[in-house]
Image (cartoon, rainbow, N blue to C red; front, top):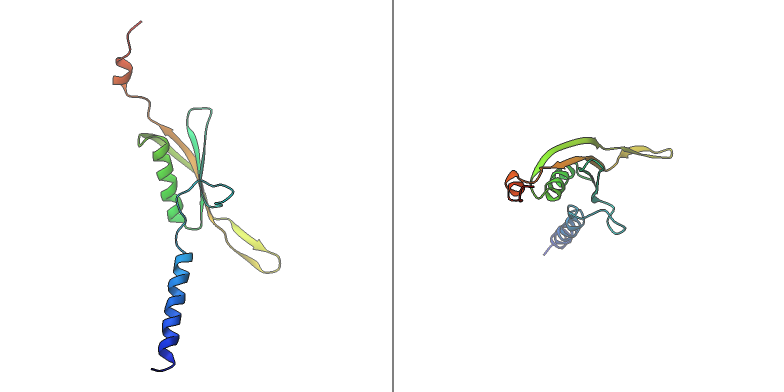
Length: 123
């Protein structure tokens, strides 16, 4: 056995261990324990504002659509995304680097079905 074989095995194990640390962010609400994830709040007009903050832009869009669907039980009438950006983080004397992605917008659910309203007795 040469010196290179154990070194390659150690390098492979290190890469495998590090790849677990870089995996995607779970689909969780933003909280004290999770800086990245989603948040939502109801609006006065009956809709919801949904916000997602993640390091991956594609995943942020996916999470935004997923949360919109969950809020409306899969019956989304209208979605209006008003923010999709990746702000730059600046460092003193060192320039800057791209920050995390922020996706935010409004979600409106479909009204209850007409058949449900028809089942109510007429006045």
